[in-house]
Structure formats: C-alpha cells, structure tokens
Length: 330
Image (tube, rainbow, N blue to C red; front, side):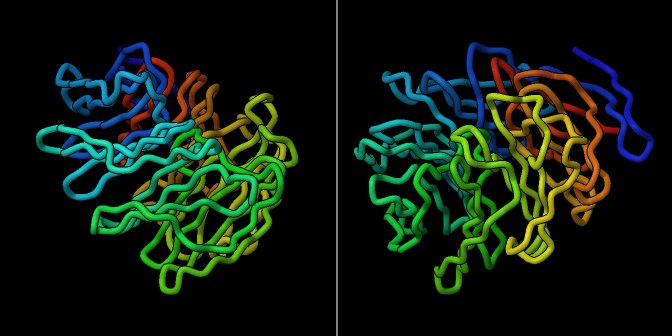
C-alpha cells in the first residue's frame, strides 16, 4: 500500500508509506534488529516483520495469560519485555532460538511498568508506578542477568507517575539516564550513572491531571533533549505539550505551543541531523520539525499510531493499533 503526501519545503517530503503488518493487536514498543522490526503487544504477542520483506514475519505467544506488553528492550543476545499490571513478569527471549522464560516476577499490587531502556549491553533500567510510599520504583538489570531494585530516596508527588505510551519516557547517554513523569506533576528525573545520584527538575509541560504530562523524551547528547506529550483525553489540545532543553534537562523551554498537531506519544531525533530534525507521532498525526523542535509541520493524518523509530535517515517505522507501517522520506 503506497500513499504520497506533500509538506512544507522547509521540512521533508514523504515518498511512500507501506504496511508491514496487519493483525489484531495494539503495539506500543518496538526494537530494530537484524533488518527486522521486533514488537511486543497485547494478548501476550511478540514477533517480528522484515523491514524490506514484509512477507517474512513471525509471531509467537509468550504466555497463555493474555498479558499486555508495552515495553521492549534488547542486549546482544536477548530481548526483554514486561507486562503491565500485577503480577509483572519479566520475559527474556533468545534472539537465535526465540526460546523464552520468565526471569523475574513483581507481585506488588501497584506493579505497572511503564518503559524498559537499555543504556548499553550491560545495563538497563525499567520503572513501575510507585506504591503507597510514593518513592520512585526503579529496577536495574546488569550483565549478571539479575533484576534488582535500585535503592534511592527519590520521592514522587502524590498522583505523579508515568505513561506506558511508547516505551520512550526513559532516555540515556553513556553518562546519564533521564526519566520523564506525568500526571499531577510532570518532571524530569536525571540520574548520574557515575554515582547513581538523582537530580529532579520541574518542566513547563502541561500537568495537573492524571492524563497530562510528558509521554516521550529523546536526547541527542548530554545537553540537548526534546520532550513531548499532552493530554490523551483531549488529543487536539496543543498548549504547552512540547519542550526542549539545552542544559541536560535542568531548564526546559516550551516550543510551538498552540501551533502543533496536539497530543504526542513518541518523539525521535533523526540520526545524523545533530538534533535539528525530528519526527513525532500521536494517535491522530505524524509531525516533523526541521529546526530543533521549535516549529512543527503535520505531514500525515494517520491515526492510531503510537510509537516510531528511525531505520535510517530516509526510513521510519511506526506501530500502533493493528499495524506496523514503514515510511520513506525523500
């Protein structure tokens, strides 16, 4: 299926969009590996579709419990995914054999894991909604293969949590991990990987209601980053839902308030653009920025896509309700 779209000359042109997967599934987490888009989704589904050969695909069921997966990560040899809701089961899937096993189980009633992110092959983080103590519940995975809870004193506000919207509310460099929260408060939790200490910074992104806040972040380096979100109950609302930072997350500047396509679940900086170009997706739009996130052009009215990833400088894959699509940019 091909479709052609035009857009502002200052940005890009969409050359084509091709459907790679059609299925009864909701997908909010994808990973790229071996020229394939790997996904985890609803009803315990996990699988892949080849980026260049859509007919080459495979899907498997990780559990008979019909779990809802919204996280996915990978190291050199394995994929990892965690279901939302309690009990949270941490699955490990062998990349070669696709054999899978549960390697950790969180039985806390409040368990709800929002994102899973690998800093490198030896280090990964995932975090859950907090319990009654309101302390950040952060789990760390190290090369020994064990998941353990990080000891910290990071207190969240009452009603502050995060959104399992696109597996992109954690970002990292070699030195730093950033976590974005939402709800009653929408803040950036910045962890120094050298000493595992946290700094917490307020943001001007819309917040105060359980549906509001930052849904996705991406960082170019230790200084420049982008945050996007909004209010999923008001997808057309576009006030104070995009912000950028130039100092590693301490201070955020609102961008394109009132002048963007609204609620956004995923934002990704274009590789090789040095942060100048980026793409975003919400459940009612695909948008593009060519000026470090200051202005945005809606390039498609595609609906029900939630997560995206750059394959290369001309190719982006999207996933969401019932499908995975590939977009070529000219």
